[in-house]
Length: 392
Image 1 (spheres, rainbow, N blue to C red):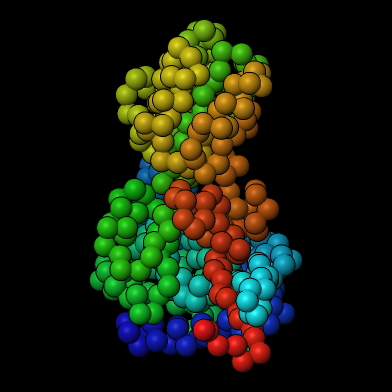
Image 2 (cartoon, one colour; image 1 turned 180 degrees about the horizontal axis):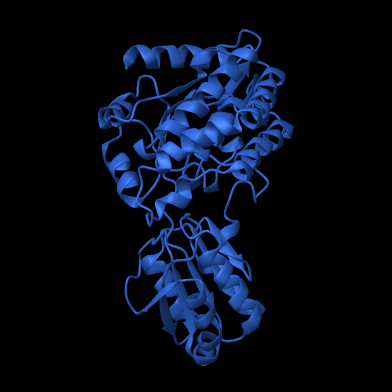
């Protein structure tokens, strides 16, 4: 493990000084290879899917099809179009004979521990290379066959672009690799866990490497007393059923008591038709990742805000309202990474935010928050110039 990480760290020192032209070249090569090898990718994915039970909700997170593979490949083109995040002068100062520049630089080596979703393998690798970072990947055993094929294409694309093959490494699925990553503060600069609350808590509690928390989403939508009921039903339905196994899907619906009977009379049959299990006044604070949803009836906006404050994971929350003052109050008082007015929470996504893809959705406040793109994978250093200045 130490030899592997030494090679990754060495590759990181090389990558940090490579041109953006070469980094973009890698993205173009990989995009073409993903499309060319879609059959090989889907065969490996079928092997992984065959290990899960037919009704396992994780199947949707794991499953790839041609459309999803092509969408992943196309997102690489969007990343390539983005401005180079490295070498940006963030600040200039002239102080006491010193010329100071704050300049953006890569982290170096990013470790990512994730579950189920093989698209993460490509997204992380692409965003890291674009931002001058190497990546150490430890995916879940349920996606290992798919991940192996994807990483083989990533590595061959690195070589074809003239970049070090060790810029991206996929570790085995043994649990010992996780603990070794968490102790590798000599080689890994930041750890990003992507998965359920159990994984995130374990990483945060055991890592010697700085951690950015991502993924766990207990998502709320509040339907206010003043609202267009038909439009609100459409938003709630989209937030819950369009892809229930992802972190930005709706978990808890909060409804003002004044319109609850009329609103739920229209909404509940729509949810039932799509197989959603609805529970009232229980299971709050749960991230279901399935066709299940909790409902809370409240007397006022303040009650809704208090409920969200108690149970939120600070991921995504929404208000559906025709009252502009209530919308402004909700935006001001809800402390989450993404706060919406009259919008489905399913938009909390790097692609939807114009980032091309995301390395994760940060639910903490340091140093990034919400969908993390290439700029969030950089830090900075100070460059100082003077005419042989000494401090008195």
